[in-house]
Length: 209
Image (cartoon, rainbow, N blue to C red):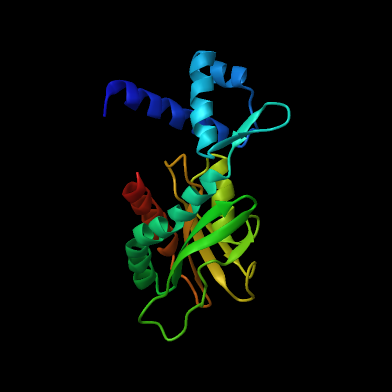
């Protein structure tokens, strides 16, 4: 790729990441200042990105992410599921509990990958696509902790399903992903479960980095 084309691509990606930070829309002038780029360069980037549906302008001229990014986001979930499955399978077999990867979608946690252990007589049936508020359950609490810069693992009981125990840890070091790895079971959990969940989350982060 020519150096000029690579630089344009890098600038466009920086602009999209800036708009994705959750702080609302920006004017082209604000984007120019935050990106340390001239206004003509920013306008050229916006023209291209708007033409592809990746950004949009509101009535006041502020720039927001466009709906074109939704198609990209929908394509990410199968990729995450494929990347996470080997790690979750090892974790489920080690712990003897259903393992899952949960990602943040606004104020909710969405289970995008679930693996059940093969050797237990009974385990929690947790469906991919299950959704719950981030404030309830270990998986959501781990994601909220990640937003605060904390990397602890969390243990909860009965918050999502009566009698079910959950342990989850955030997937750290990936600015583009708010997620946690966890396990859920009706039975007792060994003391080693928390460290194993943390190790699984770190393993997945390394796979995705």
